[in-house]
Every structure is written in C-alpha cells, then in structure tokens.
Image 1 (cartoon, rainbow, N blue to C red):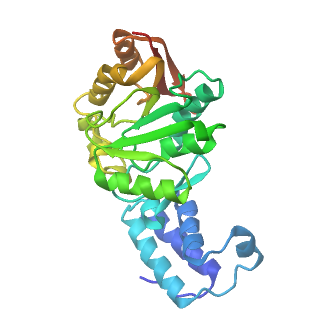
Image 2 (cartoon, rainbow, N blue to C red):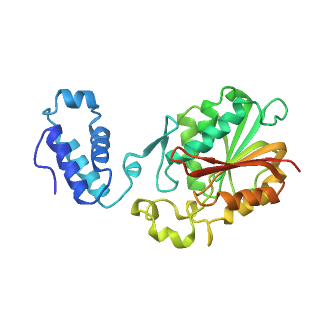
Image 3 (cartoon, helix red, strand yellow):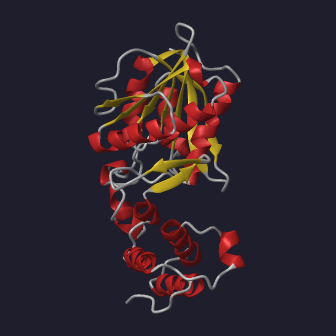
Length: 293
C-alpha cells in the first residue's frame, strides 16, 4: 500500500504508522531516517515547512523502503551506511553492521596509542585488526590516532566480499591501510605492536534467538562463535603471541558474559596486566593484555 498523501508530514506519519504496526521498536527514528535518506530533508527544514510537497518518485521510493523495513531488513542495509565513531561506513549483507558497543574497543586502543604504550618497529607502529569486516575498527583507529602517519594498519578477514567493503571505506575516508584475505593468521607476516579483534562470539545455539535483523541479515560467519562462543578467542589468543612484539598489546571485544573465561585464556598464554573493561552500559565489553613471553 502506498501513501495517498503528497506532503512530507503525511508521508512521514504514514511511514511511522506502518513501522509501528510491524512491531519495529525504533519506528519513529527509522521512519525519519528513511525520509531523510530519500528526500535529503533535514529536521530544521521539515519542521519549518512540514506541509511541503514530496515528489512522486520520492514518495514511491520511500514506500518501497518502508515495506522492506517492515520485513525487518536492517535500516543500514536500506541506506547502505552506518555511523561509527563519528564516521560514516558503507555496509551491506557481507559485513557485520558496526555497533556502538564496539566503540569501547576503538577508544581503548586509542588510549594505548595516546599514552605511547604500544611497541614500535622501525620508527612506526604496526597494527593488525583481525576479523576486520567493514574495517570500521581499524579505520576509526587510523582516523582518530594523533600520529596516524606513523601507524601501518592491516585488516584481515576470511571473507573476500567483506574486504571489498573495507577497501571502499578506506578509500572514502582517505586512509591508507592494507587488507589481507585469510583464515585468521594464515597469511599474516611480521610482528605487530597491537592486535585488535571483534571476532564472532555468539553461541551457535543462541543465533536463532537473535533479532530478525541480525540472524537473517548479518553474515552468519561474523556471528557464530561455535558451540560455546569462545572458539575464535582460543585460536586468536593461542596464536597471537607469535605475531606480537615484546610487550605488544592484544585487545578483544567480548560478549558481556565472557570476560572471566577470556581473561583466564590470556593469562595461560603469556599475557600480563589482563584487564576487563566495561562499556557505557556497564557491561563487560573488552579484554586486553600485554604479551610478556
């Protein structure tokens, strides 16, 4: 069913009602973002002149997007982008949509860089982002680091399609980074002062209980942490020491109930000063440690 009215206000109200009926929790915001995306209108213009007409093609396109959102297609897949760390990233069905929770990982990495606690190599810092996906973690660090020109960043992922998105994001943000395809560390060479990762950590049995936007549209290989959700932590922690400089730092995003187990793994594999950091919601979100072997 298409909206029958021609004004911005009526079209927006129509969109809100359709999404509310479909059970979309953020129906007000989603309806607005789609209107903004289709028409280019901002809130100031909208509230100054809500009765302004909407073009027929825009109205039809808006109706099409609202229909897709009713079917739980993620808003970010409809607009093709997501904001993260104040930057816009291209996203699609090949990458995990960046979450605000993950900003804690980026902010922690930036704190280490700012304090100059990351080992250097030949006058620069080598940084690896394992399971890079859209590249949002690596590229955000490179963008916001004060001495970005001294950082050589590499993003690794098993998905060729995800790496294509990461490369597009690097180009759009005018950042220099290298991207390597491979299963974890299989094609990685050299040592790094810092390794960051947001690996898959959802238990396989829990995936079917996730929101439809996640379970049906995020790539399953970016979600599935195997039986107990800890498979990729075991692998990354076990292997990472080979690729870290002495006193190199490993930072991992975790599920809110995984901190204690990941902390034990890191202690057993040669990491000291292992610390669990909470996110803004007060939930365990990042584990980091310094490699001492």
